[in-house]
Image (cartoon, rainbow, N blue to C red; front, side, top):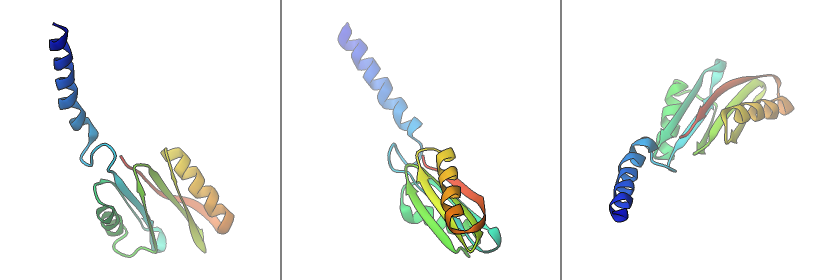
Length: 120
């Protein structure tokens, strides 16, 4: 009797888990954020390959980006201001935004939050 219960639980976990993982799988999630001229930005998330994440974020900037950064299975954010930008990778959106803004404020004037994305 117990073997049947264990087998049933094992089978149900095996069939539910992949659907919950998302398209990129449990730990295979690339994302990217980028900023371009005149405040244009791009972002991507949930890609199996880093190159895919870069391409999607670049397209979001109209193909005309000045800075583009990738991250893996985390959150990324960028802030920009006069003369430069700041960026961060963290475990949450809030931390990534805060740290990107703080980093940018250390190096540029009028630094403002620009873009974020999280993968998975």
